[in-house]
Image (cartoon, rainbow, N blue to C red; front, side, top):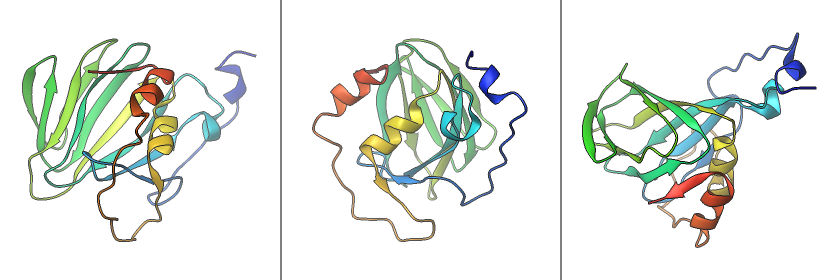
Length: 163
């Protein structure tokens, strides 16, 4: 059965606060909420979720060797660095990141920056779980914590490139 046949006749509707959520380590310091991923959609080719980046924090530069990613700014303001070029972002800003495109996301605002991500093939949800800590909605943010010491090996095993 192909990646698409497993989901024939299957639908998933996720509400705010439903599904997994993971506190993220420095330098992002926010949380990630995978919403639609193979574990609940039965479709292996794409996943989607939200990443909240804390005030003054950022997602460090990286690229995806084997994945294509869409990023849409949902709330807040900041900027993206894409292959060394700065792009200011706010609600409704969207970008396409092809294979091996270096990118970083910075929260320049006074509130959380919330980005919606869509990635194909799926797998970003596994990365967030692996490097993060379980989160329950509404709980206060933990003290900033370090990334796993083997994060580069984790990234490479999941098709990401550390830059």
